[in-house]
Image (cartoon, rainbow, N blue to C red; front, side, top):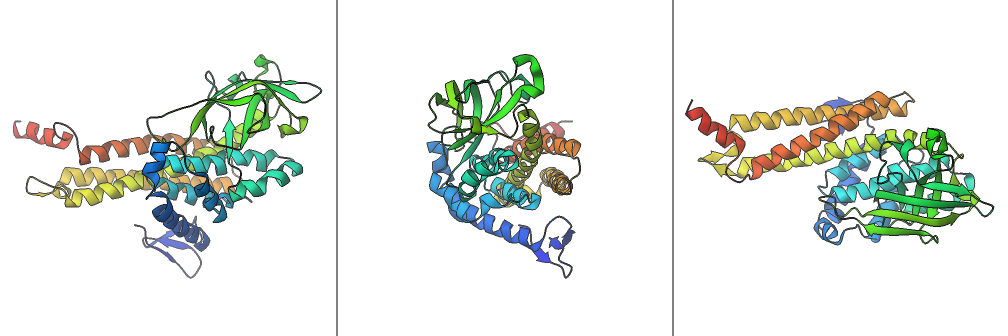
Length: 368
């Protein structure tokens, strides 16, 4: 576990190394989140995986502790710390439930909402009394936001939404949805997309089905249907026709916190695996004594440290107002691939039917 101390100049030292990215406040937050994870997530995470969602009282508790308010006003360090520590919980369904609310959905309200919209919703969002989802992805459009086909037709009474959204995190149990729809012609590209606030219970809006998943089962995920769903004129979030640009802006933060979460997950897997390797005996000695295993873990540890520093650097530069599209894209690509590679190796070192790869290679080597 990292040991953190504060130098006289206020710069944090992690394991004796100076960190230019975090202050003492950030590390106090890290400690608080870590305690919350140990006491209020890990003991119950398996049950939440079975039931398919995180209980609302847990989210309210996170809100009461201030975890949902660290982004408002925007503070890159708090979001990265929260994402990384929730990732280390080993229950990423819980992590993504919270992070979609804080860093992917409610940011639309904060960044583009009118004063009336923010006055109505932000206090409840920060307190965890209102949980948010963002509905962009469709059966035939994901990262290609301009390709969405949900429409919003303007009428005297408001806007009439028709269409479907797919793979929407928090989709079943959210209270407030930030929904992307086409207010222009389908072929008009980016200038046709507008964001809307849609409340749970609005006539014509319903959950089509809850979706089960291979992992992250405690993250409720849904197909959403809009069937002549009428929302008032003041449900427009930001300016009409500017929704695409709002989504692109928020993608930067979304990808950064996903990278931080992935590195938290990877670090937790390495910690668990090292502890296992030092106690699991095979061939008369702990597996940790095998050079090939130690070095493979050491290389993964180096790669995770590199990914962590990439996340920190990109987030810090973003907070300084720099254009970090390239760096944030690197974060999402590198950290997203790396966490999968780390998990694969860690599973190999725990148990593989018929013998681990390293054991097989030893058998080959004996016969060369």
